[in-house]
Image 1 (cartoon, one colour):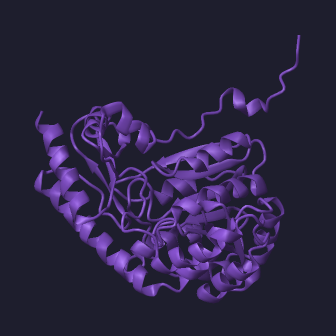
Image 2 (cartoon, rainbow, N blue to C red):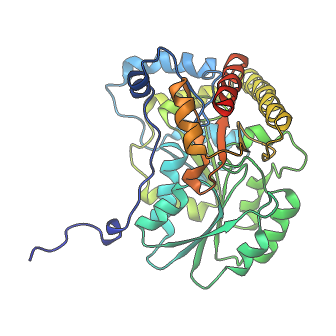
Length: 366
C-alpha cells in the first residue's frame, strides 16, 4: 500500500470558490456586456496617481521587486504615524491572512469569527488544522458576549471584520470596548479593516484602532489597497501590529510577494487624497441608491458602512443569481453563506446601479 503523500487536512479541505470569469459568462449567455457587482471591487476606477506610477514602472518588470518593499513600508509608517517595524506588507489582504495562519496556528488551536464573515479566516485555519467557531450576528450586531463565552485555552485568534464582509455592518466603539475588556491578552485579535476608508467618516466607527497596538501588542490591524484605491488587480495589503508580531510574520511571508507595480502604485495612491475623497463620495451615493431601493420594496437589509449592501430579497438567492447573470449582472448570492434569500451587491456608477435595479425587478417580477 502506498503512503498518503498529501497533507492530512486536505482530505476534508474545502477551498474558496470564486465566481465565473466575466468572459466565460459572456460566452455562456451570448452577452456583449457584463456588470460585475460581486467582488466588492471599486467600480470608479483606480487612483489616477497609481495608474501614472504603474505606467512609469511597467518597463522594469523584467526585474524582481524590492524584497522588503522598504520605501512602501516607510511611506505607510509615515502615513499611519507608526514605525516601519510595525508594518508588514503582502500579496493582498488574503495573502496576509495566510501569513497570519502560518505564523500563529498549530493543530488544535481555535479561531473565533462572526457568521457570516470572510471565508478565508476559516479556510486558512482549516489547512493549519485549527478549528473555527462561528458566532452568528444577533439583531444585526456582533454578539461579542458569545465571542467571550466561547473563549477556551485553545483560542488563538479572534477575527473581527469591521466593516464586515458580506454584511457591511461594523463593530461600534462601545462594542469593541467590551470585547477588549473581556479577552485574554494572549489571544491574538485581528481587526480586518479592508473597508476602513468607507466607514471612518461615521462617528460610531472606531477609526483609531491602530493605537491599540501600543496598549495591546497581540493586536493586528489588516487593511487593503484593493477597495478604496481601486488597485485590486496588482494585489497589495498591509498589516499594522506590534514589532514582535511583525517580526514573526515577516519570517513566513513571501520574500518577493509584493510585485513592483503594487509597490509603486500603492505609494502613489497614498498621496491621492482627491481620488480617495471622490471614491468615498461616489460610493455613498450608490449605497444610498441601493438602500433606498431595498427599503422601497420592503426588503430587509443591513445598514452598510462599506461598498456593498447585504439584503434579503425574499426569494432564493441561487435562482436570482442565475437569472441576473443571464441578464449581464453578476452579484454574490447569500446561499453560499447559508443565508438563502440574501444577496450581496457592490456599489457602482449611477448607470450600473440603475441597471442592477432594473434587472432585479425583471427577475423578481417573473
